[in-house]
Image (tube, rainbow over all chains, first blue to last red; front, side, top):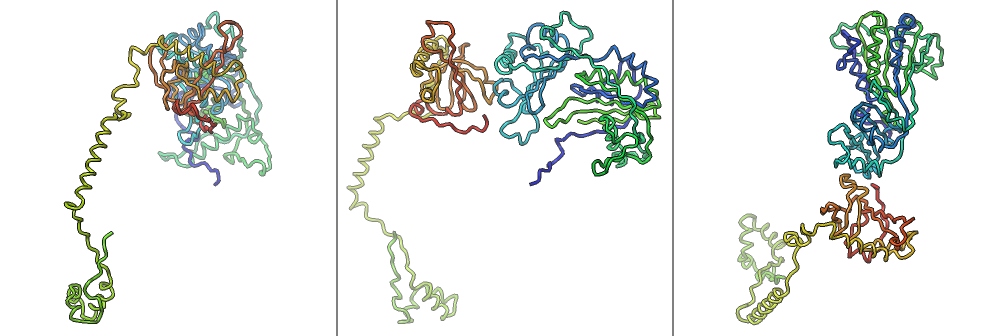
Length: 354
Length: 244
């Protein structure tokens, strides 16, 4: 009767890891080890946040900005039909030879959304378009209760040697893009190649180029709870660690939201908000938040994290949050938050929402 | 029905004890029960019940021999008649003999191109001179038309591998269209969960070659699962299709 969810199997989960990073070479950051692998597991990144104590920021400001500034991520917004992807220079330069990231407009699970990553084109299609397009795919979303209108996801690896004009399978794709999926859509475009190709095959489609420079919000006077996990001598973490992880993640999220609930001297009627800080003994301090928002490659977020790491004094803390684009109709996203713990050289806590 | 033969013995109860003793049932009952119980059981449960016997066979050898002979004669005549008129082949036999299969030599697109031209002329005739606003009447005519020779293309199907197949219809059976494609292949296209598209050039388009737009029709295969012969006189109703 009541519409309670039956189980939590298909709902997003938050996995928490507490560990040490070990030695990190900023030239060649590890890719398989946590927490680095968590950043790279995002398909696309929409937002990167860096939260620092104010005094640390004052120390590292100049060095950090100087080392990061030549690397501000660049992306473009462009309106293209799907068929352009398979034509001439665009196909050869960007998909076969180069490496680009592309994401089309629309809500996942509602509209037809197209993604391109590592040469793999993923089409999330509603039933009618899928049946008309004639490209073989898999059912999208939850297996059960898809009703009469299931959605479908088609994956095409455009880098395969068989993906050439004139081949049978490729002609089917051309047919679909020419006859069915013809509507031009707005794409976000990011070229992973370091050197730009000249002439740029994208230029004839009049892209709007954007550079993502960070928004720095300073003077956040916030109440800071103790950031270190309670020292349990147990080999297994018990409920204490869970409480710590949940409460600290909530606090960090409120910082990222610029919520007044975590500001110093905040008074709110408990009728409106029942939020309480994780611990009684809170210190007050200034925080600085740097936010990059745009269409960012996960590799950029990964390298930036490795670059920031040696700049920060070893005994101070910082938090690095990477958020993706909305994954479902309700707007749930993948996100990973890495908190480097204070007073220890290499310890970290990683929250990964998958 | 078996004839009723009421018990001949013991017609009058309590008249004679010695006669009731003669009855086999009484003697059997008296072995197990006391004489009073045996007699009550006999009177209540056995005496008034009829006893069914098998009827004896009528004497077939003498009285009905003539009838039997006559019957056998008639049977023989009937079987001879059956043998004279050949039975139609069953579906299984037809399949085994490959009767309706198109031989390899006839699977040529070029063979059916004239048929397609004839079909265009036929369908233009069906549609009439002024066909541009397609009314319900013309749609009904189209539904009952013959589709042998039409060039159809699959535009939507639940089996997505079939989408894009195009060819001339060579056989229109209840559940499938068989088509010959440009590459001289015969393909069997089920009508279920499939939409077909066919185009008809408007009549007289051959003369004036400018500004003529082909009429494009889409055919819902789901609603078209009838034999061609049944379709001719059929009144089409629109059915709800939940998975459209």
